[in-house]
Length: 227
Image (cartoon, rainbow, N blue to C red; front, top):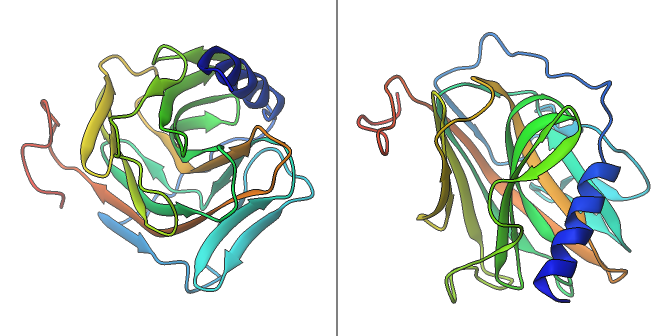
């Protein structure tokens, strides 16, 4: 599928997935450090937004989103709200997944207002935001990853977003891919993203969810260690 076509399909899936009635619920007692290996199915992760007939939930000590056919963007969250901090997840595709976007969202006010970061196993990625349900790509549609940066299954990939004031930095396997200097929202909910833009089976296993809250600015990267 050509990049322009994939971008159009991704955009359609994003818009189809939005439910404007959902809202972020702040977690006032969020500690400086959060870690979840999904071994405990009572840590609160659930679909956030579009819900349908797909396999989504805790599975064998991880969190899995699996789709038997084409599916618009699906959000999952445990309700963690972050202003300044680093949000990270480890993931790998489930064979025989076709190219499909997976990643993170941050600064979500609800499912119609958030920033998203997705990578695709065909070697592309995108950073985008929705504002009142209107989609804007911050990258020029689907951008090209450095050759070999995304590791094919069963290898794991580490995605991260570093947030500080109005700056958002997007990383894959420790490599900075993109940054935003004027983010729209100062804080918001964060969680996982996954979709499938083909009719082939697709799925992703997520593990090692981690949040480090910063107590100092990131300029251009954190100038002090996470608390």
